[in-house]
Image 1: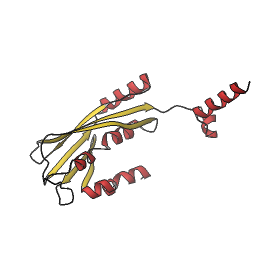
Image 2: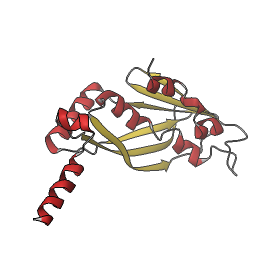
Image 3: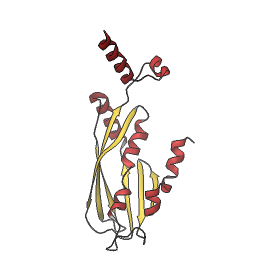
Image 4: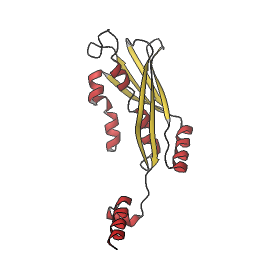
Length: 172
């Protein structure tokens, strides 16, 4: 098992998750996170703290993209918003899934346009299936720059080449 898989299997130990009582597990096309209402994640009004509702949704779309696209792509979260629709009580659950067809579409667009900013929405639901909150995530995806093998062996980057070229031009 590689280091990334070990880290993901211990996801529940991540301090914001541990402190809020959030658990996460893999599902076929993504992840699912859950949080029970406890005395330590309850707000002044006796419902789930909004920051914990957001936290339970934070990294998953970027993680799915990074895993499915592989090391030849850079993936970042770019922006997020949360809309609270009803008070969260009891057990709340959120699912994060990206269909293989959407992954292929993102790959094609980022190759064609050199970047892609896909947006995803997750819903946080209570035990009755009612929507408690909607979280929208804007991600950033671009292919990594491909370096010729000789440069990669020397540890040289494209910015190193630009710096060397500009120094040579300015000295002539």
